[in-house]
Image (cartoon, rainbow, N blue to C red; front, side, top):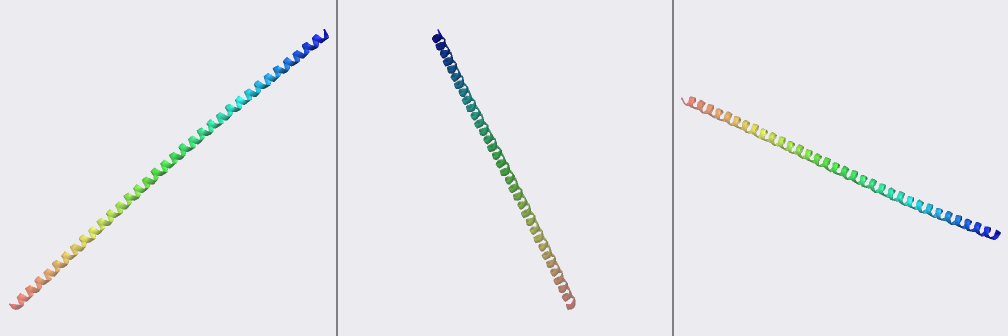
Length: 124
């Protein structure tokens, strides 16, 4: 009878041990799963962050490029405007010079006419 009880108790203890072991294994498995999930989440977040950074960088580069193009365009317009003004100025100067020359010629002609008249008068 005692032997039987002992045997039963031993069996119970063994069963309990097995159950405990199983529970531990299950817990370990769960922990591993959780860790794996956390790792995956972390990776996903990092990827998203990197993607966002890349997009921002691209956007910045695009904006910078557009700004630069606008600046260059402005400079070009300014340069053209200056050249136009310069050209106009030169034309005006040329016109003035021509006018002066014409006036000079007219004066010369009048002078010559006058001299001729005087000569005529002297002859008479």
